[in-house]
Image (cartoon, rainbow, N blue to C red; front, side):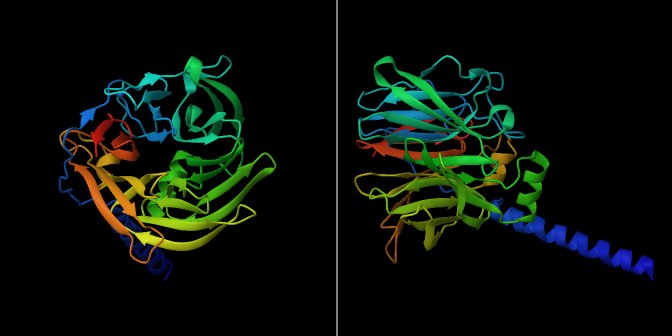
Length: 354
């Protein structure tokens, strides 16, 4: 009898693991191939060789790029070089991305930047918020951008138990931000396990100097986050669920669900065109190729444009798609002055005229 119970339990466990494996392949779009969508006149950006995971562009056309992200088990083309923040001036005809200097006292040797966000204060001070993973831990770094010196002054490091695995940030004040945790756990084995089992424990955190709290939860894998031009709505990408969530920002900074936009691709970072409110989304058509790197079959890139996301029928269009022959593993797309910038997890970056 005991043997029968043991065999039954083992059979159920194997069936569950098998079902989770099939479900994971579906969440990763493991069998998908992308149809190419080309833009004429695209060129690779000089100065970007090992990733540009996130991009944020100031109103004056200065673009910040986070470069050199390293994650356990993920491909990296510059494993010995610390990450950094690059800048390029989109007002120039052929801008080159140059690394910004960082003030003394900040540990550049373990700098591992991920998502970034800028905030411009009433006195025109520019703050740059960076999700950082020193030694694969999780912090949020707050810098002040000093334009005349082309440098970053480090102001503050934020650590909090509610920020175990920060992926992206949207700044809403000099020390205030929303952040996504792409995993519930910080331990690498438990991260893989929660993804495999699809625990849906990831969340969105609101942080201020007064404290931090969960403002949205129950996601598969929260990733990119951004805010509408009127500051009324927060947009959250749930990557492996293939969704973008629209949430109303309440007076107490809590978030109230409004709608969910279902897509057929793995959504990463979200950028918002300040003049139109359109969302520009860096996507992974097949995330399995991104996670298990094969140079003969590199990960593809895809950029979506979403217009009128608050309407009953948002317009979703693929603006750019490539099978990896030009650009591998797109994570972000941002626009300025008729130019489109596309960044990647660990590859190059592309600039295209629109």
